[in-house]
Image 1 (cartoon, rainbow, N blue to C red):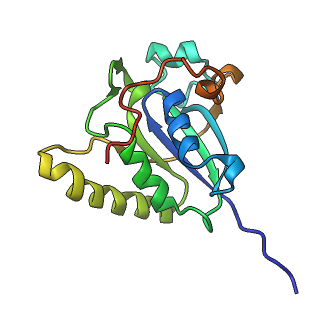
Image 2: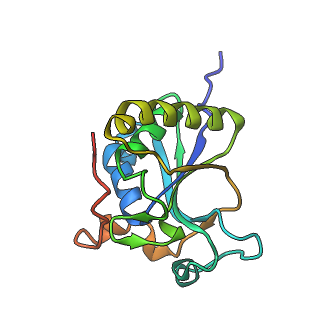
Length: 179
């Protein structure tokens, strides 16, 4: 009798400054609690194809078009991709184009980077549900893009779990539970 090991999956979200995005996800699903998130990394994705392995300074310039993003490795038997997508929408303002709170630029855009056709379908379905339930009644429209995942580049080490290492560090005011 063999026991099957769950196959992990990867979710990638951009929702403004990646410090706060990582912090809100790991506060909800601490790795040590074994609730489904297995590993996270902050980094850069969705940028120009001619720019590989960008630095924080390059991304902040806005010239590379990379987004600051969070890569989550998760166990789909403990937390579903749909739950992660819905939580992503709960924890930032998806109605602003290329900004979160005071942070402005394409690096702070709201985006879901899907890895499989199934993830794309779930992201589109959940987006539609969240739009109908939470934003249409307020007369707002979700500006989040849903894009195929491309190359991923980990951010410099000092950015990883930044707000856990620096509890008084900057956190975008939109990174909180909105409902």
